[in-house]
Image 1 (cartoon, protein in one colour):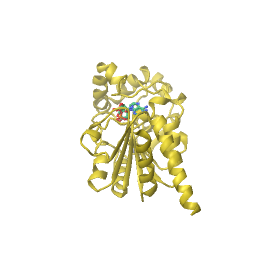
Image 2 (image 1 turned 30 degrees about the horizontal axis):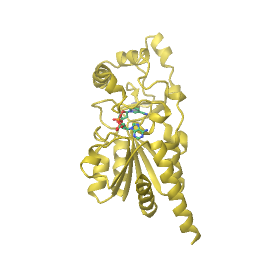
Image 3 (image 1 turned 45 degrees about the vertical axis):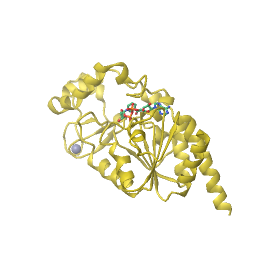
Image 4 (image 1 turned 180 degrees about the vertical axis):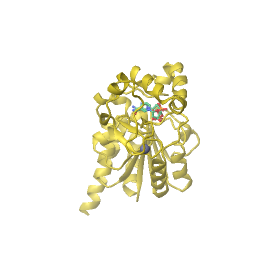
Length: 268
Ligand code: NAD
Ligand code: ZN
């Protein structure tokens, strides 16, 4: 049964004109990074952490110094992301891009694992944990460009934008924070252009990201969904195909089949 769905998904991908992948925290759980809303997700286990996260953006707007003091004193909820390595889900999507099938990966993840795995056209919809961003002029900086601990010790927080002088925040998008305009625009261009969206490991309840597969669907794109459990996209009948299981197992099977089809086409 699952084999048939994998086969069908591969056939549709190989026949697509412009396929994009939309990914969520589920593609990184097999790299040891917890998700938020899965069975052992961070919010599932700690509603208090979720309540605090809702206040973060407001704190940045009203008191950026304290925002940074709090940020630097508390370990990241996702653990040390710099040690995380891509898993077969990320490699499979990178392979599909190399095959010329996936044209773009739009990810909600902040862990940079798609880039580490070799995907090239990646839109980090909710930002990148290793960057800082100026909310005023949208400039991004690698976190190593700033000595945050030094600024803290000298009482010089927040870090400031070298271009316009505004207080910098983490590049990651907090609750109630608008998606940076450049990212929003590129993502919309991609989903307007696609005729197939492969959506993997997302609960599809965080907006506005969850609007992207819906936009693609309303424009007639095929939606292939891979997730551990059904989501609103499955239940509302938006997914053309739903493959239930781990992305680390299913995506490599799909990528191998697509490769077979593409090679066969090349030879004939
Ligand atoms: P989510 O936690 O809301 O949902 C994850 C979904 O993936 C769940 O439906 C879960 O059942 C499924 N899942 C978990 N492991 C899976 C696997 N191995 N194979 C297939 N499916 C699996 O995540 P979301 O939809 O991405 O939204 C959470 C928000 O939190 C995102 O916006 C993201 O910015 C942020 N976040 C990022 C990371 C990261 O960077 N790795 C981790 C946690 C949260
Ligand atoms: Zn700036």
